[in-house]
Length: 386
Image 1 (cartoon, rainbow, N blue to C red):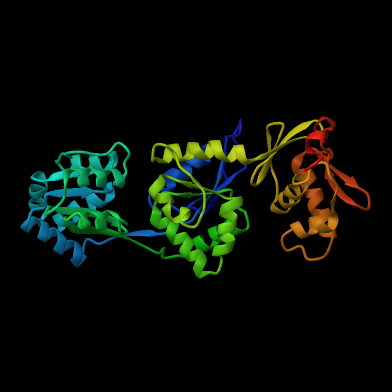
Image 2 (spheres, rainbow, N blue to C red):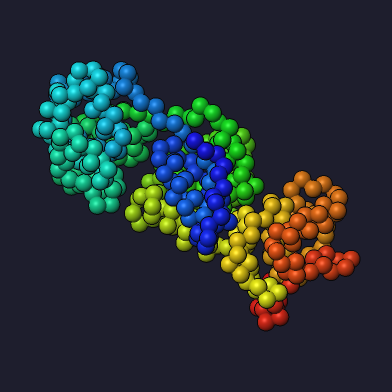
């Protein structure tokens, strides 16, 4: 597991160079992190949950025996890891063959292609799978078929399926939940707290979510620490929330947070969404004959990637909010985290910023007043009213 990893200097830099992305996934986090890093991002990993198998759980054993003894009409498999875990647990109890025999005689529905793969690996064949990978589409099919008096087993995936089970029961179905694994809080909460602190301080540019429970867990942890208002403010304005699909986004959207998701609910397309969205959100300005693009922890100066210390980025963002205008030292001091009242801190951070940019003339010193970005004359009119 990694927490903070800086990618090697890409040549040329990738579309996510200069951005920091938080990864909340418990499963396949290394794969997602590697995809992000290959495109230039720095990655901050903090699994918001952990998956706990319940192979020795009495609920799963009881549900399995009950389905073997009395066949369901329909079985809904929701996740690949969950379906595999169910079959493996049944094998461990000596019930594996009996369970597979029972499943061969029922209507077996698979939520998506990964679940289909697990079903077929077990020697079974699904009857149907939605193209959208949506449980809503599964529900629509079942309700259209009619479920009154039918016995339907639903392999749960660590959390209740809000509205799904209730709708089936309201339509007259007998629903049997099959709890294969559960989401639990991480054993080490430290990485999650560090990710929350980074999000609140705008130390990350985006957060990625691959499950609704992870999104809910991060929000719950923020609330427990008294940081929920600050986190929501960051997510509303500065930190992009990227979700693998619409179901994953629900806990965030319930808090009014806008999210982005790929059309295909996969890690690769999720990364592609970030490659489009984050550069589009970066501020680009013509300054002192250069094109300057301000990213999360770095600046592109004529396409050359220049890493900038956090204090320098704070100053640069303060200057870029009023490009071409003089920003007083006292205002810049307020933008520096933990600087206190010593305006000398502004001068020190500014010197380091100019060195990091590699082009000292980008920022002009206005004696006794402050500093300004040396906006190109042709751009003055455009930004005169900013």
